[in-house]
Image (tube, helix red, strand yellow):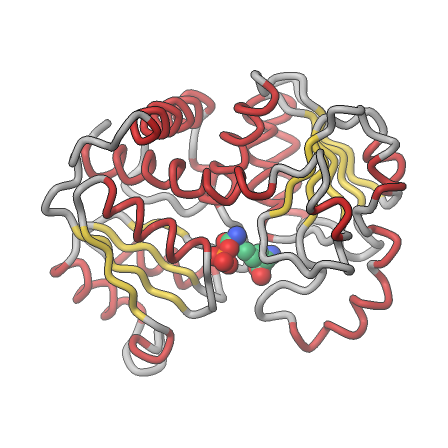
Length: 308
Ligand code: CP
Ligand code: NVA
């Protein structure tokens, strides 16, 4: 694996499988009474330009459970690129900590941090992608479905950062993906180019369309996310007008397989992209999915910092 984890596209299929297997091992160990302190004495600096519940707490607990320490650095504290240049933040912080996790607006910033940091940098969400979410999600699918190859995942809603990571991970591991977005909200063309290449190499299929009923037909997994991501607030009204046909509700999921699992990276805007009935219903795996962020990130930290 590279020094950093900025995008799931950087990982080979073998590296992805390795991370998922380590995550499963660490989860089993934790469920069985606690993890070995393999990160004793290690510290993680966590830079946030945006709010977070899951990413902050799951990284903090991941470090704690592996015997290390995590430090939260709020948007006001660091003021990435305003109080101090991004390269200087990377130069200084990497003299103090063993690893940096950053949640940024522009993906360029996490790339610059990685370029100037002596220690590994992990992307904790950028406008481009959300690799730690993608890893936790693959772990959740593996647990609930027993295998990944041959599954059909349907995405309903915005062609956003979370979808980008899922496309890279799914295409590498042989999961078929059917996407339904409003016209003009498809994933970026550079993302699709890479995802289609991975899909071709791994015999998986990617279909980019606009009809949610077609996308979810016979799906094993239905995934949705907020219609307006952090940083896109100015487009909220326009998006609220365009996205309602893509809501994941009971009528829509009836077109999928009866044992379909419904996923959402959270936070959810209940009543918009997902109804209460589905989020709290028998097909929902939302809380397992949230928990698995912690186990997946433990695997990333263990591989990057303890050569697991
Ligand atoms: N899914 C996710 O990354 O949640 P947070 O924004 O709360 O970290
Ligand atoms: N797409 C969402 C994910 C939040 C975890 C956002 O970027 O705001």
